[in-house]
Image (cartoon, rainbow, N blue to C red; front, side, top):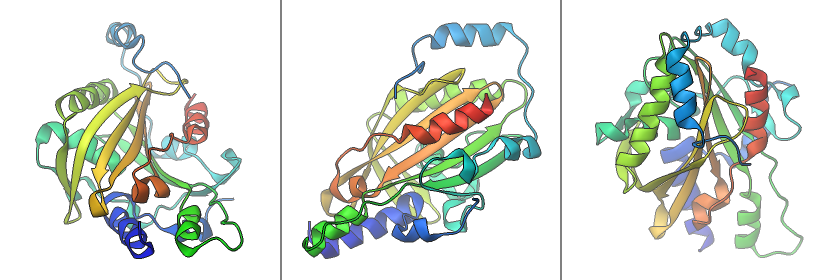
Length: 263
């Protein structure tokens, strides 16, 4: 891919996906396998038999959300830039059944939460070797992850319903869908789920593949995990995956740290 195409692809992904700014690491801020689908039926049955967990308040979510001291690497922003903080009315899937996926990809809570809080984490960029050609240097500099973390609490069993709605959306929209985010049209070619991380009552990992520039199919990783009445959503993108189409694993250190705080 030509350097100009690389830059154009990165910018397109920025507008359509997560405002992927290579300079995000310079922003100021404070200071793999798991339970997933296996045992989901048992967990759901137990949840239906027990009283619904109490929704956390905004103050309680803020206390439970990540800060810089919780992460060994990368940069945590406790104040998320406006470009990464879209409201629900700015995101619309053409097919209503796919709305949960359209929301999750852009770190917008699913459903009607009682309270929410958001964080941004950007991993450390790799440094290109001396004398490498400009295209490879650019790609090396883009080889880092960015994750938007959203905590949302729900009343009256709403968190359990959100997980059901997400599961249904992946099944119904596996063949792809389109959405509009802040006026930007986004085409998704497919959606697939896998086991989510440990440390939650329910969890799932979802890969949605986005149509990027010059025919590139860009995979974006989403992890959703429920702990009691709180749903943690992680929308992750690797910059090189966006411009090259190569799938990158979800950075589990971010979900591990957040789920540990939720307990």
